[in-house]
Image 1 (cartoon, rainbow, N blue to C red):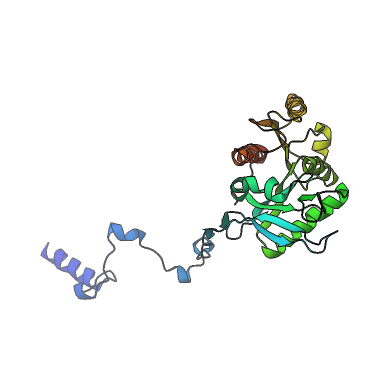
Image 2 (image 1 turned 180 degrees about the vertical axis):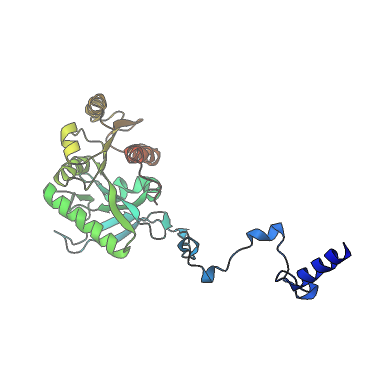
Length: 292
């Protein structure tokens, strides 16, 4: 037995597994088995370093206006201006939605647009060209005497002027076209003339004979109608909204309490509701409407 024990010690000392205590490499403990590998020498594509994450966009608030700029380069451009409102929230790399308005007869942009600037600024950029003529002489309020085709051209010229001042900040996708009285009638005709350009309409104080089939061919997804409670347009607008709703079209009427052919005191709140309503169809289609 002593010989066998002595022989075992000799064999172990001679084996490749034997080492002196001070020269033996440390043995891994169970916790060490999951220690990270040196990825710099690894050929595993799944462990390659990921690109740096894109930082979130910067969001700022700013002065909304309203502002006015000379309306140069259009028919009868002398003494004409473009009235516009800037989107309250600016999101880096995300242009704001375009809204536009056409005022009525003897009805300046400062009224037709100026009474709902908060609703506009909370949605995007609002652009309101002044009409080509004036009521009662050179110092009277703006009005329209030109064709709807020329009103359309003037509207586009006004939008281009504001876009030039705010390059890259305005987007045309999902644009909203609004109008008051004659401006509302013109807005409908302009939307029909450019399928897809104006998918949302808000028509105030104008009994426009809207047709579901024509609206759909023009790519108009929703219409909001607004009328004064004691005005001459509310009866016709009520019938139009009811007919479109029965046909399954996204339409609704708002009645301005106590108003005739003018705005009620709560028009800013009504316009905010009307904007949310027309954009519901965009939300139903899975588009993020919170893009200001």
